Image (cartoon, rainbow, N blue to C red; front, side, top):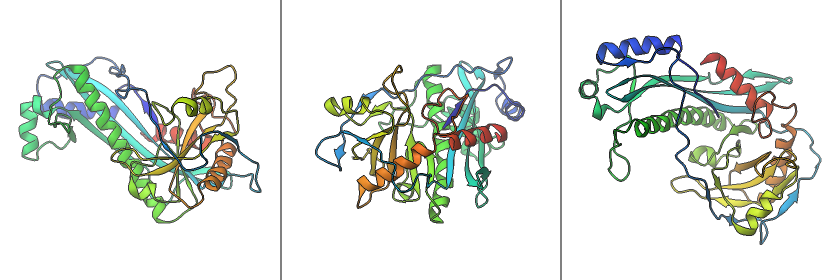
Length: 332
């Protein structure tokens, strides 16, 4: 997943002019727009998971096997860009762009999947509760163009967001993230429905039941805000050498689908931190999880060459995912 805080573009400028016609008093930010975004609101946590391979989690060397080439047929990634265009009585005016694409390998070249075009959406993310004139227009269906997403709806506890600008910005950031995820899921569902060769998805697959239950989708997670291991299992994961995977376990997040998962070290971590070259893989439930983990791990290791330089996340990133990100930068 590519997340960008790039400055204001021409599309965003035109959208801002339309918004200012509906909301006089908006103070636009000079220059490219603020790119200082809040850190993730999710705290880093350790969480236990149910083992489905063996009696204790351990490191397992990924064998060469009869197949040395990758079995992935394509790569899916999404991108998002958040632009803080101005403010209204301290309320940040947030313009978000989300995009997603599938890139297919044909004769060793990456091309865009022909069955479904790339998806791009651009919207304002505003707390209509605190913007009465826009809120009244929204209730009458008169807010488009430009499209506006209301970020002031109550959460599960019934609480409305604070008027603190950072709280409103965090709400908007999560909404842009949801928009990107929806675009990714639309493309992944279309791919899985055709039963094509496995799709390498940047990120997890448990957020969508159709994708999580398909053998045509494999999720590769690069960030580890949540680690699904504790105590001795945690030490076993940190001790993985290049080309070693952990035992398979089951991940069953609340409000998400159950999948099998395991950790895989794709780069040698000596001289780096414990997360260097460490990914977590998600796949659909199956009868032989250990064999499936072995096969998919070989594919992922094969995808780590050539290096995804100069990207700063090259230690965890497959070249096909970097190709997706470069393509999305060009179209959005």
